[in-house]
Image (cartoon, rainbow, N blue to C red; front, side, top):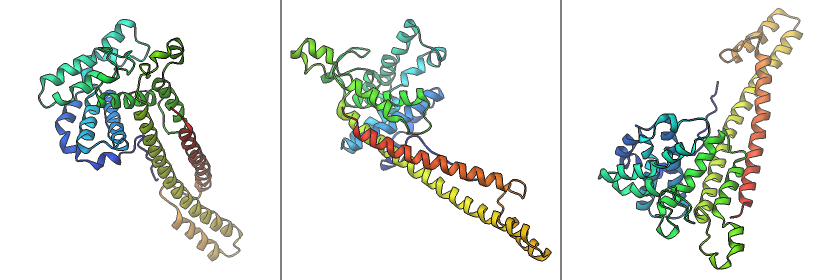
Length: 312
């Protein structure tokens, strides 16, 4: 049977650059991370690359930012797995340990000449434009641009992973959460109108807008994948409806020769695992699956409309 496959992040844009050769050494380093962190790092790098394209960054910076995205959590090599993979809420002490992955990653990169160019991505990807981030509480003017891009990609993927999305339906709720981080706190502005320019939120709004475009691309990519599966379902339904029609004619046949003719036709049309006893059930399963997939397509198109209405 056709296997419906979907990568949550479309891999298309990463193929635009010769990243495999450029990142071979960095990817070997990444291989030492635990599987969840490694997958997260790959997702963040993918998002960084594609956000850079929408920001119209040059190729050199795009590659730099993508590799920085791959390596942003490299400091987690030094965090105990019992803390890193703890399913329940971290204690204050455990959270402080987790936060050290930024400085640990920075130190690791600085000690390795091949990793040194990406050290600031590891150090500053949890810094916030308003100075509320860590480890150093620096503000917008001091946060490297690649770290600002990584932060947006990092937060998005963290929410997606936490909610275990299997599809882009309801992804606009995740983007709404990020919008809150991109907007100034109204209370702070109300208290001090003179400080409006400083209260710029935690994440870069322009970068977030470009993430929206990446998410829409991925949603369209998912729609395309589901449509391919819908085409497959329609083909199977058409085939099994012909089998069903032959079965009805076999039942009505008065001559043994005619009956055998239609029965042989049914056997010819059976796919692997299908037979006279189960084909009707399989046909109904295909019909049910078609209804569900068409519903998913409609929901995904609706989701795109919702994302386009979001404002930062």
